[in-house]
Image 1: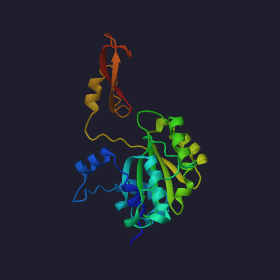
Image 2: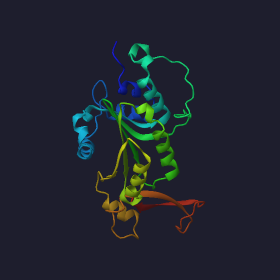
Image 3: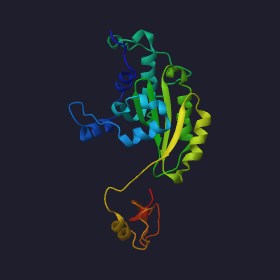
Image 4: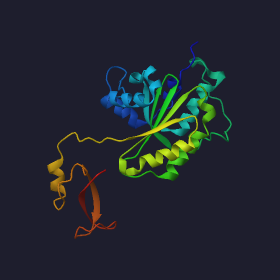
Length: 240
């Protein structure tokens, strides 16, 4: 009987419909393969040289992966009683004071697994880092250290520069132990020429589409003044 792999333990909990929708829409072949892109792999391996020996091109990944699922998956992986695929028990387990199953949908935005390596990614785009939210996740991850025995783990933060990512990353590094942590600036390259569209949408704005490449919807009054209770709306260029 073969020992169950870390990837197998993670994937059996992955019931996120958005993930399966993306695989069905964008995946290829009978297994709906959708590998990580070379740019991300090169970036990670460029900073963490040990990742060069891991087949990240064929790594398993998931999005919005619940922390409850992660606790359960790691528990199954570390459980000596269920090391074979044919003997994965469904026994009742005591609620751990270290790794509580909270029954919530609190998650990590992205998770990558290859061999005995797990890479967790948190990202922000249009808003800054909510420290209460972020460090609640960090605290749960830190208390899971026993479940990561013989597993290499990484914590990556992705965010535009304006979100104070470097300062936040340094605080995370001080909190997490036995976890390699870094941050990268999230890229949002336009896939079409949106310059003229943005100028037209914000006609009273100068052509600033390099910084303002998105549109947001704003509720306003009849004069166009932003108003959360307004019965009118308008579009406005924004950076993110």
